[in-house]
Image (cartoon, rainbow, N blue to C red; front, side, top):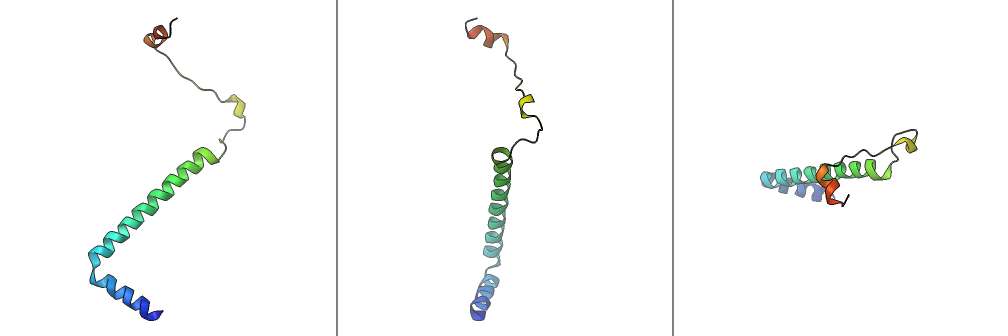
Length: 72
């Protein structure tokens, strides 16, 4: 086991550009994965942080062209 770790370390020292590139790619992928998981968890898996959920409303507006195109 010690020999394998030593060989892996020496191999990484022989090609530092590849080691740096692989490390940065892994760090970017892990960071993006954690950010997306956190966002999905907060939006879909957790209840909204309000005490009275029945008081939530949706506010929207329509323009006159949308109002006329609906046949009114």
